[in-house]
Image (cartoon, rainbow, N blue to C red; front, side, top):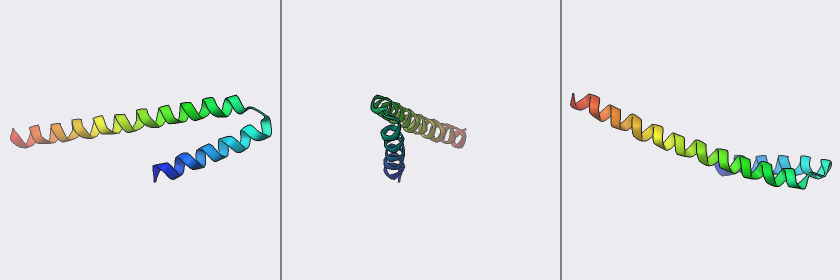
Length: 61
């Protein structure tokens, strides 16, 4: 599902960049979008692992 949202965002940014003539902006915004998406998914994984660890510690106590 995340892949479809990424494709949608890239298409919207591409259309806007074609009309404005800012191809470099399209490339830079694409890199920023990918980076933020990777950071978000990494933070979700860390949160999930931390949450599971805390739940196990509470059960053992």
